[in-house]
Image (tube, rainbow, N blue to C red; front, top):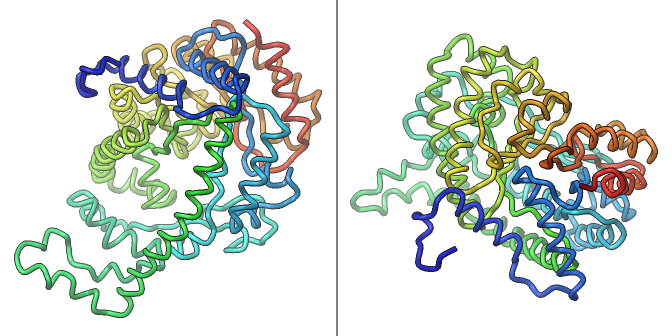
Length: 443
C-alpha cells in the first residue's frame, strides 16, 4: 500500500490486497527458515483459492471442532475450565497432525467467564449439559417480545442495554433499572443513582471479575497464536458476523417467533431487519479494521432450503445479507458465507458476486451444481460429511475427497473441508483428507 495514500482513498481491490499482505507477512519471528517457507506456501495456497485461481494444490481446512481435546486424552469440560490444559491439547495436535490452516482454541468457551455472566443462550459441559458432553447447545428462546419491535427500531443500543442484556445475562439483570444514556445532559450525578443499589454494585463488580478472567484466557490464546504461526501455520484473520435475519431469528425472537412474524407483522420485521443491517455493517467493518481481519465468517442458520419458501428467502433473508456483504467487499473484507444445511435451491438467487469477492462453505449443498453456478466466481469449500468423519474409515474418507476434488477443483477456487466441525472420530480420517489433497488435488 502506498504510504502516502490514506485507507479511505484505497479502492476495494487495494484494501483487500492490503489485508492479504498483512496475512502473508504476520510480523513474527518464525522458528526457522523452513517454518517461514511453510507458512508462506500455506497462506499463498489459500489466497489463490480465495481469488478463484489455481495454486500448487487444493488447500485443506480440517473439520477439527473440539477434536484436539480428545486426541490429547482430555475432554471439552476440562478444556473449558483449564486454559493451560486447553492450550496443551491444541499444541499437541499441531505437533502430530499437519494441515494448511491452524485453528486456535479460541472457539472453546472460557467456562468461568460464561458462568460469571450467567449467560442464558448456551449450555455447555458442566453447565446445563453433562460433563461428558462433547459440544455446546444453543438455548432457543423468545428474548425479544413481539410487541418490542418499536423499541429495537427506534433505539437499538438502548434496547440492547436495558432490555435484551438484562434478559440473557443473569449477572446484568439489574441493568433494566438504568436510565437511558441520552438522559445525561446537566447535573449528571443523578444518572448514576441506580448504582446506589447493592444489586447494581454487584453487577459492576461482576464486570471487573469477567475482565480479569478474560485477561487470563486472552493471554493463553495470544501465546498459542504466536506459537502456531512461528511453527509455520497460518491462522485465520477472521471475525464472526451474522445475517440480519438470523440476528433477529436466533438472538432476539427465536425460530417460532420470527416464523410467526413473517406472516403476522412482515412490514415491522422488514423495518427491524433494515435497522439490524445498518448496525451489522458498521460494527463488522469497525471490528475488522481494528483487527486487520481478512475474512468475516457468516454462519447462515435460517436461510437453508426448506426453512422458508424461495419468495420468503428473496423478501426477508437475502436482500439484507447481500447489502451487508456488498458493504464488506467495498472495505476489502472477504465474506465467507457458511451455508448450513442445503442451499441447492438458493444457488441461482445468490449468484451475484464478482470473481474473488466472496467465498462459500457448503454443508449439504449439491456441489456439482454449486460449482457450475457459483464456482466460477466464488471460492468454494466444505461438504465432507461429519457422519463420514465419525463413522467411516480412512479409505472411505479419501475416496469421498477424491470425488469431491474431481468435481470442484478444476479451474481453482476450491478448499477441501468438512461440511461442519467434528468433535470426535478416527484421527486417521484427518490424515486421509490431507493425503487426498496431495494425491488428487495438484494442479
